[in-house]
Image (cartoon, rainbow, N blue to C red; front, top):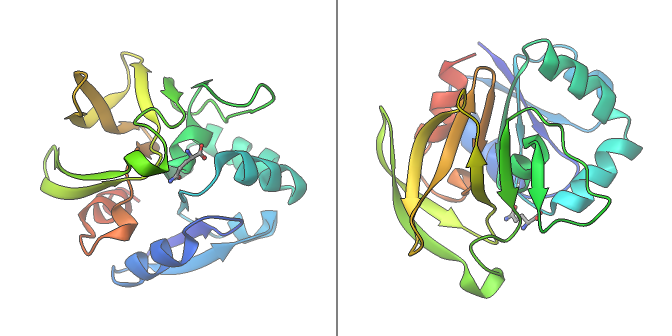
Length: 192
Ligand code: GLN
């Protein structure tokens, strides 16, 4: 059974944990660098990317996770987690860093602020239609050639990727953990 961590520094940790608990995996909350030791994969949740970035530094997790991702460790970032995995943040804070694990540019709150949050069906390649919950979601505005686009959405200004993957790194602009549909998590855990 794969052991899957949920980065438990800030954000919707509980929702990811309960979704993963419904799948065939061992779930571990990650708060310290050593929690990463025995894992097969890690979910970076939604929340506030600047806060999670700050806590990744203060917890000492950042360099350890960076090294692991470079060595092929599997990660899936949702919403704020996607921002953290990207290589370029548009509209971020001037001192905001990211792992650069996915060669994409994301615009923070690219679909609008909290009040503009919305739900929309999302058609995921090889899976079918899943409910997409977008809350202050990042918009993927540039996607490098090697990045596989598994789902796009047109929210009135053309198609933008909302679920992407490059090898061991997965990024999702919406919140599958806030629905009853576990197929996006399943896609990730099946790859471990
Ligand atoms: N806009 C938030 C950020 O920049 C992310 C929102 C979310 O994760 N729901 O961190």
